[in-house]
Image (tube, rainbow, N blue to C red; front, side):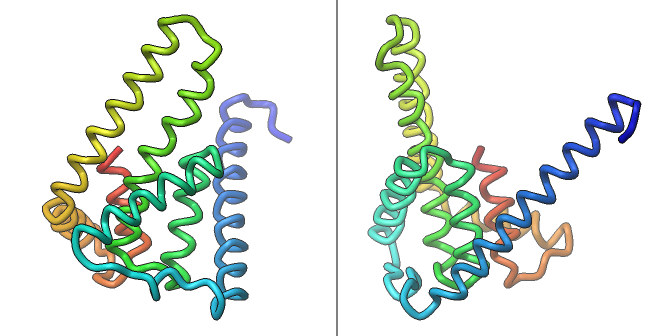
Length: 170
C-alpha cells in the first residue's frame, strides 16, 4: 500500500523471505509426520563412500526437482528434522550444486553452439568445484565451525552450519 518504490521493494523482499521460511516450516512438519517411514540418517555411510553416495543422491534430487534452491530447502528441512546426518547433508549440498547444471544442459539442447558451450562450461565448472569441495570437505567444515562460532552459532546447530557451508561453497 506504499507509494514509494523502494518501500514496496523492501516489502516484497520481506514477504518473499517470509513465504520461503513458511514453506520450510511446512516441509519440516511434513518430515515430522513421516518421521517413522523416511529417515535417511538410518542409511548414513561414513567416509568417502558416504560422501560420494550422498553427493550422487543430491544430484538426483536436484535433477528431479529441477532446482538447486528447492533441493537445498529440502536438505535443510531434512537436517532440521534430524532425518539426515550433517556430513551427508554437506555432500548432498555439493550434489545439488552439480545437479543444477542439468537445467542449463536441457535448455541448451536446442540452442546454438555458443549456448551449448556455455552449458558445458557450467557443467565442468560445477563438477570441478564439487570435486574440490569433496576433497577439502574437512578443512571447509573446520572453517564453517570457525565462522559459526564467531557469529555465536551453537555447536550443534547444523542447519545454520549447512547454510554457511553452502554460502562459502557457492
